[in-house]
Image 1 (cartoon, rainbow, N blue to C red):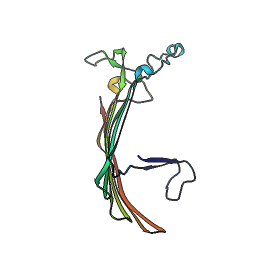
Image 2: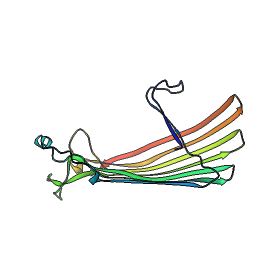
Image 3: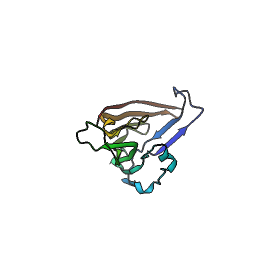
Image 4: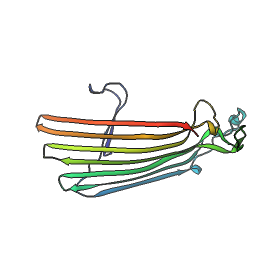
Length: 212
């Protein structure tokens, strides 16, 4: 996004409910091709150990720990037709893998009984892939059209309950069926004192939760 602004109070009448309002202004592209690349990774060795003797005495065996945090983002924008039609596209791959507090894999291959392997904690593994495309068409000096589409694939291999210490088999799998956002917007400057905006948008987040 080109700009993101937060508003925490004194919201305008067009906002139907109270709370924090986030206004995100997307990138449009320009007459010059420009790209960006962002990469960051955090290994497990960057996290300190907070398992104290007092927690061990209370029965805690393995607190949750970060295994890996990864974020790779590439963006590219430019002209399709100079001074008339521009594009901006971005792809992103990111995820956070972390262990689940006092949750372990079962050493019993038949799974008829639970024999926890305390050396192998359950890892809540997450993988997210996203692709974005935005087109901006300058119809004339006074009229502009913009179209935006964002598709996302999210896979969570071990979504465990937070109020208990579950076994690895008790965790669920979150896999999306449909995860996308689409938007079309028209902006028209009719005069020095009148601006018209009209648009349509749709957001669909349909996913399934299954057993491991």
